[in-house]
Amino acid sequence: MAVRATPKIVAQLRAADPVMDRLIEEHGAIVRRELREERRGDAYGALLRSIVGQQLSTKAARTIYGRMLELFDGHAPTPKQLLAADPDQIRAAGLSRPKISYLRDLAQHVEDGTLELERLDELSDQKIIEELTAVKGIGEWSAHMFLMFHLGRPDVLPVGDQGIRNAVKTQYRLRKVPDAKRLEKIAKPWRPHRTLACLYLWSSLDNQPVT
Figure 1 (cartoon, rainbow, N blue to C red):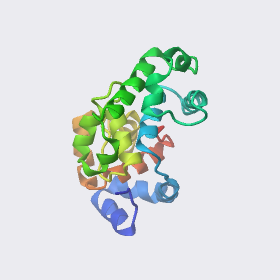
Figure 2: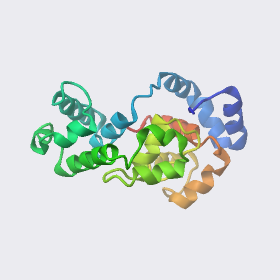
Figure 3: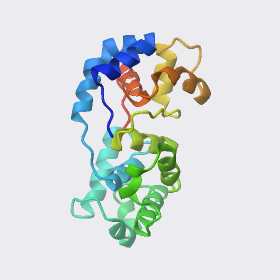
């Protein structure tokens, strides 16, 4: 499964919502280019990067993640390697104690088979969210980003994403930032292509999330 911006899908979005029609006119070429550049990596590595990058700028997240990889000969550590590593060594790479505990919890879930990454593709979006958020440090937002950017699920609405909420406030000329319920209502016409609609909204802010 993958997020696509085919002429048919784009036409459906444009016909469903006049605001989306304008956004596609303004940002369609940028989003098409970004979709062509998407490269799917391994699920475990994507989740490691997600935890490391929480509450950090893109540059800081990449720097700290790179330092962590240096501890493991330039490669993402396997769950077994991460669990065997000295937490203080990992902390020296710039990671906080809570983040190290989150990384270790992810590694433990994968190592003991509680989280079977290779079968996530077979599950529904909601079930994937439930399985991922059972890991400490992976919240609903991180699960939504994983669904959108790693698994390429086409109909995800990250109601907790501040960028999406700000973009909707601006583009739909709302008096205040919408809550989850209002956002769901506004996004209803975008179904079943809410992931793509979000790409146009992020593009309007020039503020895509770190994934």
